[in-house]
Structure formats: C-alpha cells, structure tokens
Length: 253
Ligand code: MG
Image (cartoon, rainbow, N blue to C red; front, top):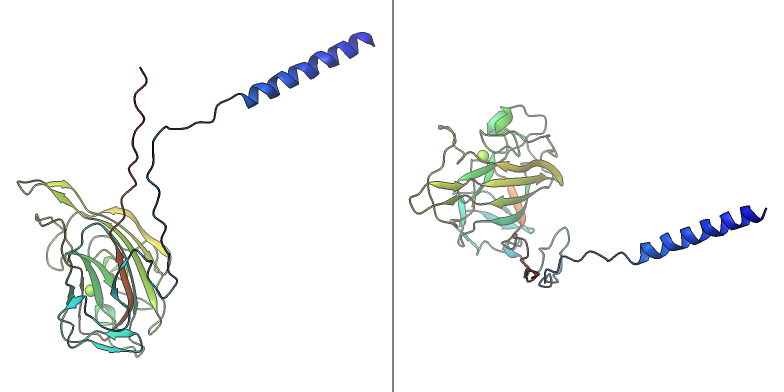
C-alpha cells in the first residue's frame, strides 16, 4: 500500500513537471516587423469598399471613354454605341462588376446576351447569357475566351443581376519585350469560383491562338458592345492586391 502511494506520488510529480515544461515552451514569433493593415470599410452588396476606385456607381460614366450612347437609368447603364474603355489604366487588380443579360431572350449561342470584360483591353472574361443556352464551352459565360471554360456554369437567368469578382495579375515583360511572367486570373461568378489562379497563355482572340505581345504595365479595362443590350451596375476596382511587406529581423550573430 505504501509502495502504491509512493508510485502515485512519483506519477503526480511527473505530471506536474510535464505540465510546467509545457508552460516554459516559447511562443513562436517570426520577428518580422509588420506594417499595420489599413482599416477600410468593406462596403456591402451595392457599395464599393472604401479603398476602391469606383468605375460606375449608377450615376454617370465619367470614368469611361466612348460611353455617350450607353443609357443610364435606375442605377444601371445599358450597352449602346461603342465598346467602352476606362480613362484610367490598370494592371494588377481586383475588379467587381455586376451585369444582367437581356430579360427578353433573343438569339442563341454567341448571339444571346454577349458582352465581355477585357482586362487590359486584351484578356477577356466572357459575358454571355449561358442560362440554358449552349455554345462552345470555352466561349460560355465566365470563360477565358477560347482558352479555358469556367469550372462550373454558375449563370443566373435572363434579366437577373449577376456578378464577377476578378483578381488579375498582369503579365510582365522585360526590356526586350520578352515575356518574364504570364498573367494570372482568378474569377468568381455569382460568388462561385470558376477560375483559380489560371495562367493565361496570352491574349484572348477570336481568330488566333493565344499569344503575348509586349505591352505597358497598365492599360484601360474595356467592356464590350457585342450588339446585345446588356446592363451593368456597381463596378469598382482595387489596385492594392499585393502582400504586405514586413521588416525582416536582424540576423542573429
Ligand atoms: Mg464577348
């Protein structure tokens, strides 16, 4: 019995020691001195985050060129006249836009509710009425045109508001015009991931295979007029898409 008590005491001491040991393990700290992440207002379903550049808030197309024939009413703009370009040029970005294909269904395939958002005026994320409207898969809504179909068809019906959230890393070229790094794109369609950091093999063309041709780091974004009266609203863009950089700790001697 005495022996049992001694054993129990030894066990209790061991547990206590192990417990103490647990508390003397140091918390990991990288030593990197981080800048404080900026506090922003994130916005809601109809407003932009506070650090975004608003490209269209339902009132005017002042941020765009060639929009004279695009009608504006009830907080949206409707395709008309020409393809429009942002006055400002953009490269790496997060882009949000909302669109609705025509309520009145007309045409089929590529002829139904066709438009498109062209990053840098060169890399098209296809906009199309792809609700029960078959076409070639790498040309349906959300496709990186003639390069990659969306993972799923997350389209809503004709006339319903839909959204694209796009994260784009622009390609980089060296001084000789050689490609240093291709473009990458991530796209959410109505909140659903349809491209995950897809590596673009080049510009998107109707009549040519994808290829790169050196261009500036920033270029205007374009919204296509493909002859169908689509509507757009709530368009905004953020350029702050790069990781924070901290100060590395000094090397230990
Ligand atoms: Mg198109």
